[in-house]
Image (cartoon, rainbow over all chains, first blue to last red; front, side):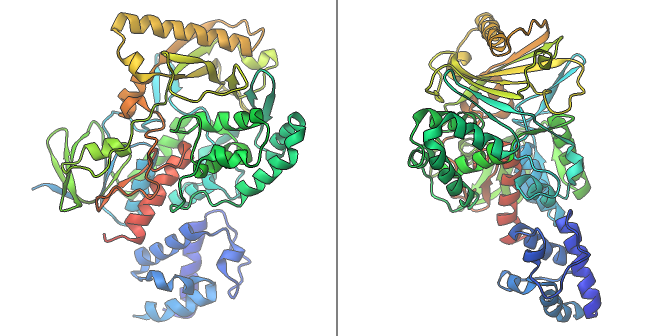
Length: 82
Length: 461
């Protein structure tokens, strides 16, 4: 999967997890937490959805790497190429 | 061959249903065992003739508007249920009704704050400092120490009457302790009632139950009614499965029990290491269907927390019920009301043992007497009501025991909670009332939090 597709995968998941949030103006470099109403329960769901939809495992120590959209893409792209 | 599950949930109440959705949503094989014929547990509904009644739910706490942050929207997100589906109608106002003072509160905290400032001018700054303390406190941390809320609040507030008035609604809507509550629970309740406030789904508690049931079906939860648990099978310090009261053996990796802390431990085949106390607080409720709306007399309040002196006695009742305080709830007196008839509910603190030992004819007589006292109180609090009772129903602590399975009919369970959900047995966790998050919203969040923590994060499924 290419970086652009990975970005869309993450956006789709955030849209489902956050339900009420508007994702149209999201900035890739800014922490997701600072732009959206996401707490630790929601981050858990992002991880769980990655596993459920794409069989990607994110170990707990790597959760900080999902902080922003660009760090998500950087971290997940190699994993999703496998 | 016995059946095998990743997760087995005891009880299809709010916490059990919420927990089951979370686990099944992420691929676990989940079964929910419910002793009764209908779901909901402590918060359920029943039908008498053409009328349908809610049990438990006076109001949904934690009201926020769509898009606002709060426990309510958090649980909707976790369960993937859209805000609109709850169809919430906000309250107009509720009232803490003591003889020498009255404090109203609405879903705007500023209203309550100004009521307190007006009634207690010597405590205005103290009250505001208490608010700061409450605002900055993380009440849902599962590692919080147990702490007396009265001790904390009295460090801020000087007037005893104000302390009593602040505590009255919070205690009766959730405390398993007498005359006090754990500070974390106090903060949960303070935010739930005074910061956020009350609302009611248009269809009552049934709306919520139906939403949860639909979600459970979508994610593939196996829900079995009329199936109680006879024994929790343990071995070498961990859970193996359960034996149902029909004699079937179900194997499972993890059990999430909403049956109560002590009640759950008693089901174990191994000797438990601790024995939580039985709660002392149970209630009676009198329910009146009326031919006239209370609003027509100018009465605007949704819920009245009535007390007959400056001291509020939230403790085991010495008599069948304690007439000194009551909650009077008008469940249709919200900002919109499309109900044909009026309904009023009166809750008294009551003594389980005393009701339980009454012989049948006597029980009926005492129940009628209690209903009469409740009706007199309604007419005292709503002057010039002049309504006729079309239908009346009464329940007592023995009814609570029958439907919740809580020992002593203790509505809010044991005074000994297990905030972490742990029981000393690997794979056995407590959710709901005895985990300690309060109210319907709290119960659902309890199921969600414990399922997340032990089923998903630390999940080995």
